Length: 179
Image (cartoon, rainbow, N blue to C red; front, side, top):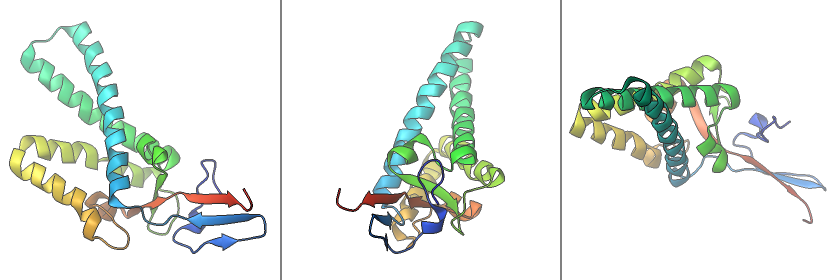
């Protein structure tokens, strides 16, 4: 049974199912490029939202240059966390994952709980903070985390997936036979 977004936890990592009317194919674990592209879409959404929040705060408070940098950084970190936590807790996906046909599920294939979604979403502000506060080391760790998708087989999990006990899977595709 598919949920309201067309995903089927029961099809998680299963072979194709055929009936006379339909063919259901679970796309399995996505290629790293799809995951990174989804993160790029999500980052664009977060930066746009943070720019709007920062702009409103700046118009209201009129801070100096040092305070402006702190406002923008705080807006990006808070917006990123809230975006990830809200989207994952509500739908098990973000806009970027939706566009690229991906979904976050628990290791058992079930939708993620609110607690798991919040824990997984903490990766955004923590990862960005480390990358910003410890420039070379932080960025190296961020890249290492991103490239862990390549060698973690077959599940292709990043560190935040391992810590939260989640995995990103492709959307189950339903194809009408003869169409």
